[in-house]
Image (tube, rainbow, N blue to C red):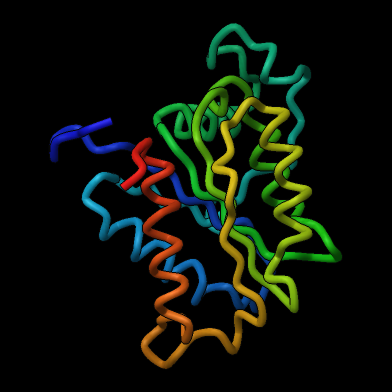
Length: 191
């Protein structure tokens, strides 16, 4: 899909961590910089710690709502409306106890149809496997809400040691090459 400057793809990046003292900022900042530097995207960055959604409490599954006016919680409705405007997503998750974070699951649960048929790239960070177990569990959840997964994901093992003083991955050739390919997948091109 070719887009001009006035018609950029709306890409929502979601950082799925809200814990005190979280350390994934280097990963998030680098991914954000790459996406914002790609002239195919208009980036809407969401830090779930700042978004501060309440725990999901709608009386019905939002996937069964006929429209966004069916929401009973105004914060949930506002979140679903924001997600609805996005055309593609990058979900960045830490790995907690071999899974992704509760705050990310909560953010996904609040939204029904606005996720459907939209492409998503999954990025994990943490420990020896770079969040791979969290990403694998997240795959099931995003599939259940109808998102179209980019088959490959990006992982940052030992992420606290993986970046230099300027905030770039020490294996810059590997990560730069991969993020370019993955962003092209999100944009719907092979370039």
